[in-house]
Length: 292
Length: 292
Image (cartoon, rainbow over all chains, first blue to last red; front, side, top):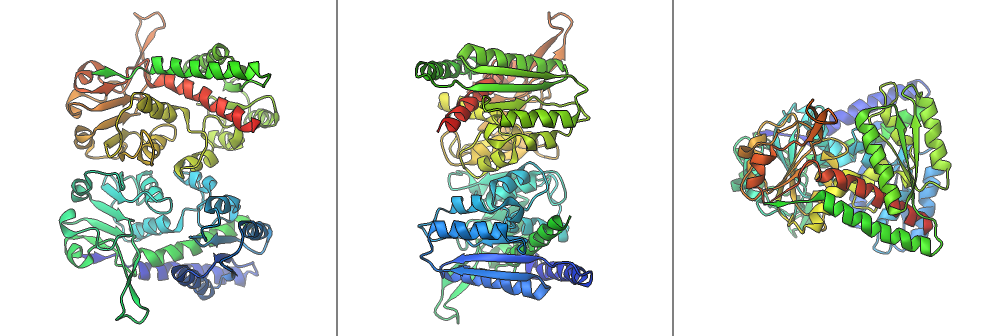
């Protein structure tokens, strides 16, 4: 069993970006500037956004955190989005999800200018991705692809089962892995809540990408020997014995599944860190595109 | 074996649209106006465009055929597209593919205004489709979905194997059938030229959508009893004994496969007529959206 060490690869990617940023600075060029909009005080969201901002600092990006109160109106948030679109200093920005219930997420995401949409959530960018055009790939599937590429995992013709059809993971990774190219060309089956024969499918899969958010969902008897497992689930399980009051776990019953797998991502330390690294990569791409 | 009679359903849909158009006229409203741009004199393209224009007439749409010579420059075509975008009389239009080799298709399709893109090929519309938002669904997959709905074919949880990952059929139908909703909620496997175990997959499939363009590709020993088969292949096979000098055939070895199938589309008379009907439906939707 080989660990797909997302933390290590994410650090490599950040180091590579840091070198490029240092060169930009040396040439007197503007460095990439990422902004993050956070509405309210959801614990996980605060952690994610904080981590993104710290990563920016570490690699030499400029960053701006726009932290708005929970009661911010949809109109006020749309106004903020319009400001960020118009602000020439900002190369890319994200609106951290989920948003408070009184705000229409789709409306907000549609308002983000596609050229600054480093999350790749805008339909124009999503459509370009699905049509094999150059665009911003959503950070989590982008991170999975990069992890597969850097570990040189053979995907061509491999039967890949994706569990979960979310817009931010399951749907885009099923598209990306079935396209032409490196870490792609796989035969992909997208499964979801209405799938009847899930075990039958996972038992034959060469590669499984689980993006369900249900702890210990994928058991050892559901996979074959030599399978490659990408665990995208990140669930906070309450645990009073932990300092933070919870621990993080994935979709995979790791201790039992790992011995059967040829490669597997841990949680934490797998796909999570890759997601942040690829967001930074997208921000660098945004800067480069605006430069040219 | 039940025939999925695309010709019959397409005529029903056209009749339904004709009733709506007659009502529009009766209320003194503008009727839908579809334009088609054809560059050059490709035989199949002339047939398709001619058929689209005739269908418009039949159901009371206005239509405009913009027929440009083979040697039209990319710049001149972009100019024509800009004119159609600006022309308030036109509700929607298509640029018939393929275009001559000296013209960049992607550049042309990107220039079509998404609100008039009744083919649903623009990334913004494609992305909306992939993200479950309201949009123009590309006519061929839209036609397949409508055929499944009108024949009340059960798709929920059914294992569907799509053969071919083209942008106009395989990719979008794999997305649509795996989404939530009617004629959807299927477990979809997208197969393509790099798939290694195609027969193994098709033999287990409850539903097969073949969009390959290889005559008689799908044989009887590749499918199980009771399968539902949607044949999207349309190939012109040269045949001197036919008046036109060719005959039309699909991807499926129909005579041998049909007895095993619970439902199957013929070629011609299956998906083909549905495609035109759904293009008209999209044009009606374009008119209604502009009205509101």
